[in-house]
Length: 165
Image (cartoon, rainbow, N blue to C red):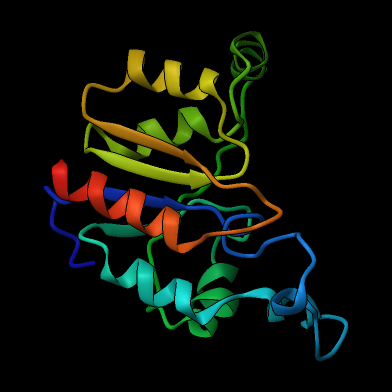
């Protein structure tokens, strides 16, 4: 996470991948109503992410709140945050036409031709196809089911891909 212009970016979504929606003993909320859902965060995920050879970037509607609420709970330093512009009517029309996640165009622009990986629970094949056609560098769009969140298998997939870039 040194900010080198040549390092691959890893765009991180929070709701779903890092903060799973699924049930299970490790996912039971505790604490106050306003912070109970944050108990589903797994500190192991922060260790896995910090070990990856890339620059981590928040790509979430949490925006700066991810640095205040999520990063400290999983052991990450403050990270850059992708700002979400208000989409134009034309962008919304095209996104709907192509079946794109609302984040896809912004992340390709933000990457500015750098290779990137993106973990999200909203990624589809349409996003992969669009990125392949509109981004000249390598990209891995890795879907993480919101019911399970980021796992060791996801870490292994990312680690292998990032080391091969």
